[in-house]
Image 1: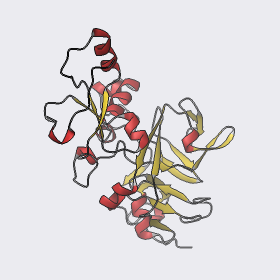
Image 2: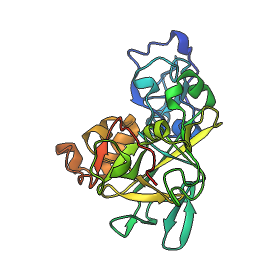
Image 3: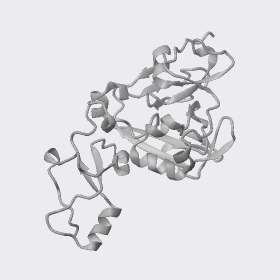
Length: 275
């Protein structure tokens, strides 16, 4: 018998609780109100076996205060960016839906040929969270929104997911250079890209490689997770620990992850196509 018991979260001592970060299962289920607590003790002492099992599988409790519209770490996404479920990526064996990609799968990248996926992360954004914070609403790009075959089919992206676009479409950039711009900036300057405030349960995925990559989702060139200092800090605690275990050098050298090949343009002014 487990000695863990249900507690009153409204009156719980959250300040002294051993909070470890967002629970991976909670992130997968899209329940932003979950938190992971190291140990919650009952009134009676527990046997050693129960203590061991509890340490290995922490109790997951529903906290109604997490995931509210209040800004702060509790409402921060588990990872930045993301490609919505249903988008297809290119593999040596043909197209594969992003939700079917697994660590070790080879993905066709723009600049470095076939690259193995190291991690696939998923998070879910519920309609309630989008209603509470409209900045979480995804960007929908219709076919040919950015040019021929860009994308080939409709695709949904997190608003901060960066997309590779030609420099001539970005104000103040070199016309021959590619730029990485946020999807929300594309929605502001493109008739066939818009913010979708009613996407239903939004399941977002991001891919982690040994270095920053650009690959195609429904024909649209998007970036993989960028494990620089800024990106690492933006991760939920359990994903940050997983990333540092995967790339231990980042613990000592936060800037050790390979640099981005393309210019990253924040708050880009996306220009209409000249053609």
